[in-house]
Length: 168
Image 1: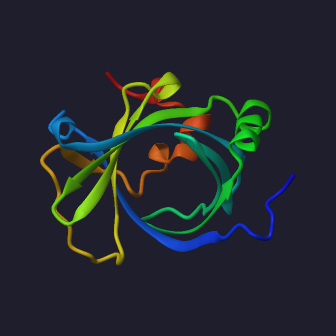
Image 2: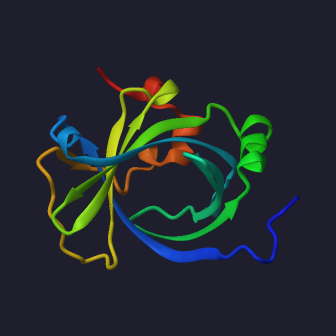
């Protein structure tokens, strides 16, 4: 069963900045946390196709493979049971497992991803912007910006898990 015509796609040009997390200062400000499990059906030069489960909801996501803070992104809600089946039988291994914590800093909602499994120890924070030059408050727990470093893209962490290249 594929996507039916009644489902609407979220079409956007995503603008997102990504930073390594350097301290636990964000933890006391968490508004919500959701476990996530995701896998990649395709991670090609032009786009990645991902299945994600967060809580009791599931999505199929197609994201442009360009580096940087702006990328094309299309997202479709899909049935949870179909997402589970795709993750179990069609996606590359290892799956990406993480808990996404939402933390408000100034006018923006940051997403702090705390990875487990083969990517345990990696914690990154992302802030989504409406413009590339939009001002935002950088929290003291956000360190080096890694928006342009492909190693930190989830699609890369499947092929080259953090545990295989992280130092110390």
